[in-house]
Length: 180
Length: 121
Length: 140
Image (cartoon, rainbow over all chains, first blue to last red; front, side, top):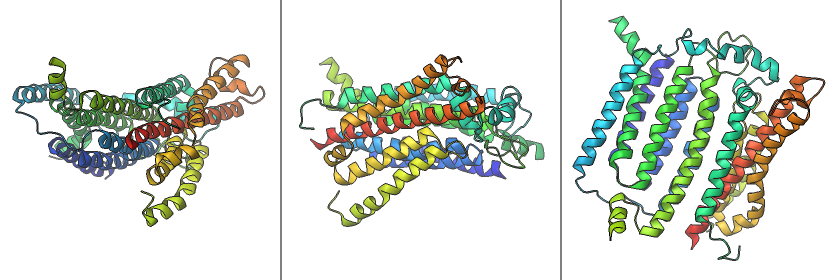
């Protein structure tokens, strides 16, 4: 049953994405991306990825939406009507279709959704699930892998966030021009 | 008939992720507005996330938090990778938006065509 | 937006609970869904609400820029320091088992709690700083 729920929600996501292509008002687009993120969070919950769903909900619907609104209020509220751009549209459509066809051809070889014997579930994942909570003393296996087994990865990620924060402040903050 | 339906339910989410990816790519390639391009990139990213999470799903499995009586868990490894990717995506999005604000101030527009014209004159 | 009475009162009531929930998510990340990233984002949200309702000037008085920039770097330094401490204790870089010489499992748990705290501090600082930067630009 869960698989059918997921399929219905994914169809909803596609409909939202098509609406996003057609809309002109950037304000409406930003708010719809918030809705998109929340539906995506529901999909992740149905697919048993609770940590990812939590992150998508707070990041996608919370922070990204707020930053989009801030950027829109600093720039412009709606997209100007573009010219014909026929050539660009044709190139875009052909590229997207070609990439999509190649990927759909690739999915025919993939194991089905929820197949417990798929190769991805037979390599390191059983080790993490069985030994991870015992070795680290943390019941949440995702946290155990994130912080302990993949500690280097997470360190690099924190460095990325740090760099992004510093860069945004360097780009936008007007140092010394006010009485802060 | 039943076989076809089973095949479709097993692969429909993967196809859905591919369609979302196509739509994101189309927005990035055809829209001139820079904020809309960023939104297209976000859709592109979430399509990849959806594909990864669907790979990690196990039918009748529990969420990967140790639970009494649970026999099977979903694969936690894709969850970790995507958790990292989501946080990196918000960092890159904020940097892109900051650059867009600077472009607006320098060129007075965030439409690609107008910025290009501004550069030629 | 502080001229709207309802917005002002409700946001003042909500902010303490948002901060409390962020700390809960931070500390409960080992046992349930959650962890440093989510907690950091929720923590930042509280200050963002304050900045939206009362203006970024007052928000900066609550959360001074020096504190904010210190937070941004402190989390990353805390994370890296755990790695160097475990290196000094005889393990490899970021091998938390070496943090406790008697019980490696306890050391692992300790290491995970500290680095999650580091992640949370950096994420909270960065996101608050980014929003303040955007909002400060908008005010003039």
